[in-house]
Image (tube, rainbow, N blue to C red):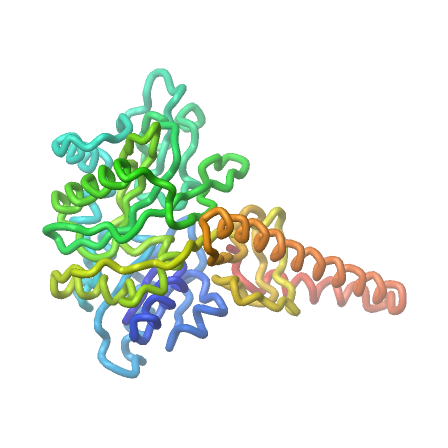
Length: 403
């Protein structure tokens, strides 16, 4: 199974769980992605420009050529929302195990998607493509953006042309993971999301926990909305719908028509999620028995409080994922890794995430401190090597791509 995503580790893990051999093209080639995948190709690191066919096409072709068996098709994750033409290029060469370019375009074009919701009488925030005259109470979103970092108060967005505007809705962020076959859909579970604000990025995605705390009425209404929207837009496979739940009334914010960020916390059911995905895409089959997810689970991103270099002596705990290579430089406010937790309750699972994030940062800080002490000792004992040591450290820090 070919996998293309900004970060392919979660999809690679899901593929292994479902019995597939993953072949991954992404921007990081993290250490655990390489262990999970039969082969992994790292794209040229230019996240601002995103995927380009001149690098993605040859990477997928090389992975397919070196595959130990015929390729089933391509599963894609984040990174194609604003470049759906690449999905058409992929589909021309391999089976596309997901929604086609036209479907993604419909869902990610605000003027089309929210008009569709109006036709279906689905509640959503007021959404416009022109900047409101009074920007107070509005947010600006980049078309095809993901992860929340692209969302800013509308008053700060005055010149960009690739944005749209939504009236700010207060409430809790809840996501519905669902499976669809182009005709109908079934909600597999709900998770609650939280933000990790940073300067200039007040709605940056921080993590999620399942199950979400919902009333029966809210869960039923969101399920009804998902089924209606999925049927009208002919979604197939795994997807997620993001809501703001204000005073028990759900407002649909967006749909991501692909496997998303909550794959990890919905892992472990008797029938793997990627098996459900392939069955729905290829055969139009939906599960007659809904998967059961035991206990609670959470995931969260660890962001770098400053520019740092991953210690070469770093020993990662079993609950960490998306592991950068030793010596990789992580820019300030970029994700270092993902931490995962399972517990008997969502409250405990979320607390474990916070504890584990602090633990990762403490490990790195301690290692940096020890490395600084060692350098100071070398300066004291062997001052003639000071310049050589500095140059070596600089090459080590710059040898890996930035996140």
